[in-house]
Image 1: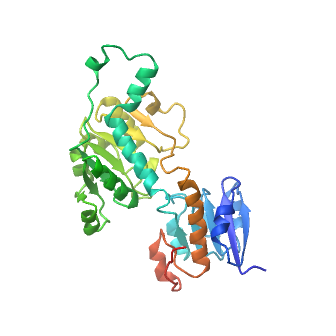
Image 2: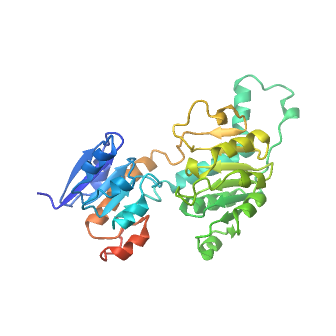
Image 3: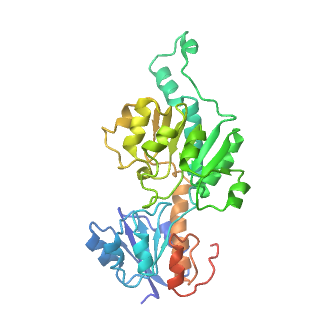
Length: 338
């Protein structure tokens, strides 16, 4: 009988090779499950020391069914499908893979800024449809400059910091609203902190949101925020759709309260075909792919295995979502790089 048991739960049949490569040398058995109900999820995780989760919802009812697991290791940055407060109550660590796609998402964000400013999709569609004529240059739409403009970041975590670093290359001034970030971190990245969301909205030529989805951030950006933005400003979202009131965003775009948007995430995913955002020329839409590349996809799998290995070795994970759980579980060794 193996020393450790891992329950690998997934929305679809996973390829576990990369994950298991990171677990090499440990005495474990892994059971893979594709549960189709909360009850099946509870059954799948019974007796496991570690739960690896690829996209399976774990509300409080499921969390309270954990009988042994020390941790839930979740693929990706987002952990909103897992009730981390319930996990804390159950003395279970929730771990994500923060960092695996920081460069990809920040690149996508900068792409959104540049594409909005240069009317990229509008001109692409115009040329492909035969709309480029000798008179085109005399009838160009208003286009935002980039150098000397202000990028406002909602949240200043790892992805936002990488975005700030890259934005400086294009001559953008960067400001941020994040009541939880230490001021010396903002100073290190040459980002000026502002005191409110309203101030950020008023000052920014481009706004990009980078926060996790939780009760505090759900619909964090809505009607009041968009009304405070400049009519020439653009809004970019590469974090989670429900952090923004989508109906308010649609209204702001339709009414001219803001100039345009680049959106990678939606309140409902996949978003319905009748989403009014589809009908707007001043919106660039992508299918929640900001974090994906040929490098980031296997990196996420490797991080799952590495964090699971740390837990089984008695170490702290690198990326603990609910650090308050430290007060209620035994002391562990320091997290070490794989």
